[in-house]
Image 1 (cartoon, rainbow, N blue to C red):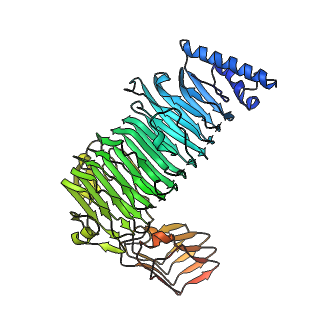
Image 2 (image 1 turned 30 degrees about the horizontal axis):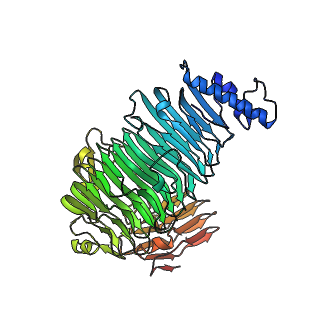
Image 3 (image 1 turned 135 degrees about the horizontal axis):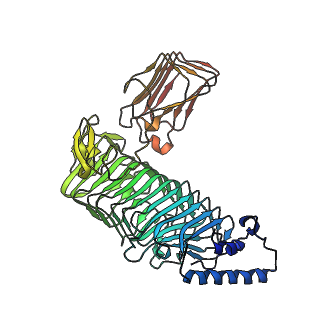
Length: 569
């Protein structure tokens, strides 16, 4: 059904008529069709009403062929619902505005393989885009693929609501969605507390489904808003919910949050599900990633890997819930750079048969992680920093908020830190061997992104690159404490970057050394990469450049340096 649209075009017999709806109608219809003459506004509106009536009539007639709905260009400024007699929807370069709701009604679509694609669209004026599933049990005679790419939302919200069919695959990528003011979620009751959120998951059950958001900015600046809102109960059953390379921003005061699970809403991961947050930046004037009071992780993985951000208190917060049998909560390379902030507050979480691992995390404040309450299970820790010091003993961790831990040395390894136990057959030589169904280095149920690490930079972990000519750009870091170049020629218009952020944050000091090197033909050596807040978490840096010759080359020191650093040339 399509209601009240001011921009529609699709390649069916009905589409011959519908293409005339387009405000850019002359470019939307094939050349062989008669062009629409310009008429008075009243005549156009009358024709539009006739077209709508025809579509409504067709919607109630038995469908012989599926309708492929394609909209290219034009404007949607009236509410539309797309579903009946449709199995494929493509919106390409469409402008959605005027606070309208565009609803993709999955239950009304045809059985079989369904596809919804939004490509390079603009969403403005408080408009909402809904992918609406089943209020009850989803039909088993269909699958769904949703692709959103290049969405520019200056005042917009993307909403996934109700239960989606099994084997759904959702991808949101390369987009920027902003909600600068309150949203009127016209299609949903019970969403008033969402306030203003670019991405909403509401009352959704995901079965054998993947929902991935990547390379996307989600920003809310409304008071009390959140970049991601989860409400009404969200259940993952053999499913994956992945945020990778995403910027979560919330600037709406102390009640705002980067991601918020409503306090009354459950977030449940069961039957080999994964909720993965990787390579994500968080900037919030209030809470960070708030997981609510009804978290449940059983035979599943909740992981935060390569997350960096600033929040008013804890970067990750959960006020209630259980990590039960077979559950794994992983915090790896999570940096809380806010002043006096901690990596996580898990004081309301009960560890009852599951595992919590905390490795290579850093907090500006004295508290690393508070809680959880342990009835059974283990909290494993390795190479963490809080309050400017490296935590080494169980006593150090007790002072940093964790009363009972299993400490793994920085140069050691353990299955509890590296593997999803339910799908791991064995662990040897610091590597997990997977059972059937386990994928990747950690034997997870789904192939999810790893943390982005810096490149290599030497022959051994602490060795020098010696006696070579570099002719290709490279980034050096890779969690090493030393970046060393001895008798190296940097030749050609290349950039060699020493990324301090990806070096060993747990070392006593970071050393960058150049001896007897030559920079020629436009070569550039860049040392830095730290923000002021990140620099507070790093050990001091010693840069020593001796007998370095530059012939049309450049050495660049950029960003902030940690306290007590020195540069000697």
